[in-house]
Image (cartoon, rainbow, N blue to C red; front, side):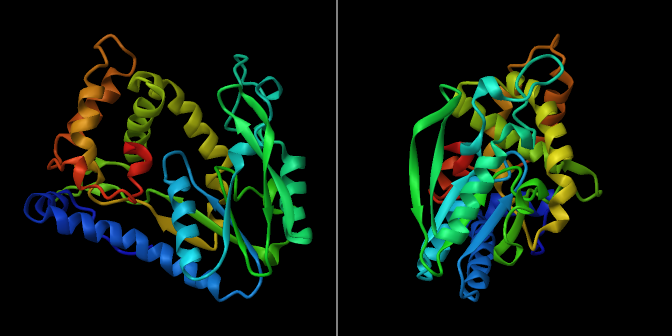
Length: 307
């Protein structure tokens, strides 16, 4: 992971005095890392499966698409597959003790179908990729056909992409394993943590949930513990198996999220069980110099959350 200056004072100084340059530098850091990965893949003369894993709101979708674009620029045809399309139908999902579906477990995926599909791509060069209908909670009747050329690449992204339950069924010599996460906290000059890594992802998810689902922050928080437990159990034990690790922090993001997230956090009333956590996040976000969201490039990873 590249070195970055993740101090509050540096972030605020850049946001205040050189906002456009700050945005450019932050975005370029991320793009450079992805371009380096693409060049590494370009050195391999056979088709590969890139298994791209990361926790909630780490930026898996954008990273997969950005890697596809970088490989396309090198003349390498690239396909992306989301593990989410291999979910079992909702009525067949594993259940939590309270009877609600457990979407975090690797067993929520149709593992035999996933193994069959990816192995068909590697051995036969073609396969039909299912499409999951999240509105209906079941697999769609339609599918997407992928046909691989001799040096084409498939990027498979999802929470469980590094899980040996999946990777052990695939030819190891054809896999490149990637792990992404927000891997930097924000510190102040006294070395106190202003925002930790998980809270930065929580803010990202809160903003995305409001935009895409009309969901309150309180509702996001009500699911967050289950999400965290799933990450602890099904992702983090396998992160050190990755060939490549990427820190997806966009250093100016808290400056942009500040004025979007704080009003949402203030909606949580004092009698809520999440009030204390909301107040801590407000206190942290208020310390950042605000940046207007119009400065965020259209191809930024942050657009995955801002829209």
